[in-house]
Image (cartoon, rainbow, N blue to C red; front, top):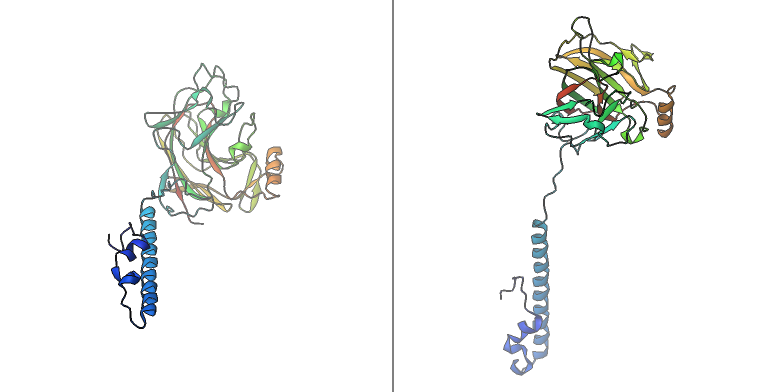
Length: 324
């Protein structure tokens, strides 16, 4: 066996292999005792070095056998917007299933996708209301939450409305849905809560005749600032055109933490506002503010898609993390 192989011989076998080590074979002359001591010291050093080399080699082999740690891009996103994938589009909807999404439908517990309201067919994220589960809508508003909170980002969504509204859905909810931004954590919603405290990017479809803008703003439990004035009204219209029929519409929103939010269609800003914040006058938001040590500004939060009684499809839901 070679001295630096992993199968290192014992010290006794090394020494026994050298006949002059034994006293009977050592030349009997003056200084023999000192010579024996020096020889022993040399072999002790050799054995020590050999053992150390063997341990180092085994450690390197063990390290090379460890599996490589891989982190999914969407999992690595953080609420401060810093990430190695900043500037790249991330597909929040994979076109196959609802992985990464959790439904919260009014009167039902978190995670219960009542009536299969949110589903995936033919590569589309669909919102449907089957008569067996929804003989009437009964204000069962729903929200499909994405798993990761974000702060600075650009969200792009392709959507369309089709079919007829669920029986006894609210009149204002015809061809109506929304992208809920800076949402509270879904775990904080009560079982009978209708909407999460959030900033709503409202999406609307035309009725075939009248003007009806999309990419509007609604503020459940929140307020914003426009032209240095606090806006308390619930909804604010954009300057977009009307989209009639079942055509696909692409909308974007740029969110800059608790600073500025821009609603964008075809590269044009159709609505802009600042300082999204919780509304202290809202009972539920007041509780959230207390949990946040009195802070009202909304610098980050979850994203959710609505179900508000009218069937709709989402073909693409993608996000780009932006540097703060």
